[in-house]
Length: 351
Ligand SMILES: [Zn+2]
Ligand SMILES: [Zn+2]
Image 1: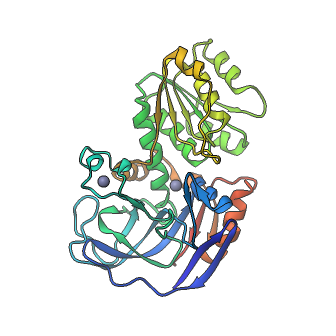
Image 2 (image 1 turned 90 degrees about the vertical axis):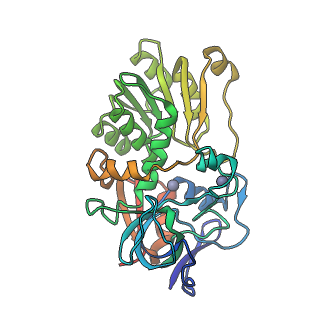
């Protein structure tokens, strides 16, 4: 089978590799069909690291993916505890927690210290034709969700978790800094959650347009004004109930803190390239902000599937570029360069 391995920063090579062994109990073999490219993948691609995880050997990226069940091991029960069958279309949640530690037992599998994650070093991801995955992480897809949009359920799951942490209330106001795929989905979910006003911020005009199309009250270009001033003007100096940072977690964190009202909430979703979180202490302290760090997701696939199936969230509108597995390096390059119109890049692995 063909696989795309990252050998070092900006060095992706396609090569033939042996297929995976037969699935063990609780596993299925997946014939991978599509993989989404994510901002966190870009960190790995550009620097060979994310946070304190350093890729010390070649490995396979790809944590947003779907495919066909090609073989089932014993007791291969899906995320809803139903038996999986060969030929089923499934999306796969990439984090595999231990299910038996303190955090797992308390309902926080996203915080499990004993987990592994498909596509995060050292665990190989989905940019290969076949892989074995935990059956429990598989969620069968209804026909209304296409192969191309299946990988975006992971992105939507990240957005759902951030919105859960924001505790946004009906009629409340929200600011979303960063309108990449995750930020756009957060803005959309804030609208669906009943926010009375949603302010979206980015520097790419096509992303701002999408935010407007999806119901944002105002979409503001951060290159054309001071975003905090613009937000304060629009809210009569009050700020927003909830500010969600979904960009590169750099000066955007300070901006988000300044946008939050006194007593408001700040949710940080973005990942900082230099692994540092910096903002002015007094900004957050004087306002008594509640600050939440958003970590992946927990069992959000069923809700994500329903939002996509019903059309409340139009995942297909996020896809801007499509590449085949053989073009993986080109796909990464165009995303890293923020090519005109770039939003979500989908790689087609299998037919
Ligand atoms: Zn992702
Ligand atoms: Zn655990």
